[in-house]
Image 1: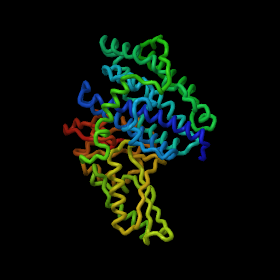
Image 2: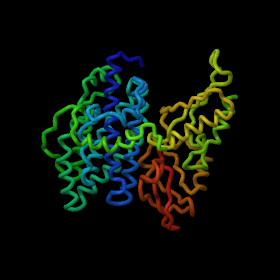
Image 3: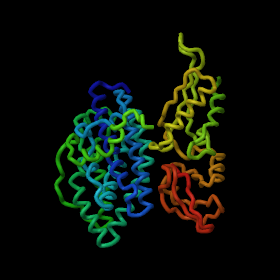
Image 4: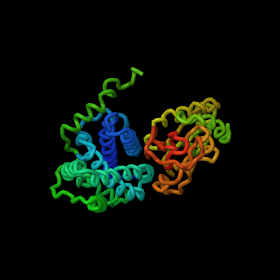
Length: 253
Length: 166
């Protein structure tokens, strides 16, 4: 598909946002390695984290086809101000309830997005979406099961889940808030309408919460674009990038 | 140098984590294309091999690509390009029956054909690769690698992993 310079730039932004969501979430998930409440979850979440990082690579490779950028440089040398992930994903990992709820919210959103992205007029985007969607099936199953366990478990697990919901809910709409160039991408058949994706995701999330006997919080959305980040992302990137920055050519190997 | 010769040679390239299986048996090699030497360039075949990853985040993909490149160079190709392709997405249904038998012998339960239904495949009865009993249970949908799940056999008491249906 031949893209006008405007569409190309818009697609680069959109792919970067999707890749950054995966990279940041993957890193937060990986922080549980060695610290998860039980061994099975240590293994499960490490796998999920690795999958997310693999999906980031799918999007960054699609971006490389457009602008020749280097995925490794984007992951390991970019400073926080240049990242375009949603704020929900850079929030600290919190307790297990927060991590599982955040994973669930993102998994539902991603499932809706990927289902529609497989019809993208841009072949490399459609292929990457089809690839990621298969692996996402297992993520959504996992986080969905945890939502039910936490909601219906003990007084403590339900309380922690409600606190997690209060913490996460204001950041949820930003996941599908369109970027400046998204409308043009939708017009060109490359990207689904993000508001429609969001409406579908929100409906599924509400249904899952009510199904588990929970009321969605009534809290206003946290405003702001994906170009605004807090100290959380700075600290995350210091952690994530420190080894690569210390030895960029991996000479120590 | 013929495509057939390259395909045969690639049967020597094993999955580094499941050394009984070749990348060909795993269904990872999608195409072998021979291109004539570039005019004025080095004499000898230019070979392109299209390889698809099993799981997007599989860390062995670099090693596998390098092993493919190296094996084709050994055959005498002047230039080798290993291209990562994503479509159609790799499916465990692409694995040959020989591959499934080898997996079982290796101690890994093979993935059953799933026809695109991934979640039901998680719940399907799985035979223990050691004793053959179907009295087994899924302990974790995630295992020691992206492509593995953890099961336990109630009959012989041993845990085992299954190659994940994808």
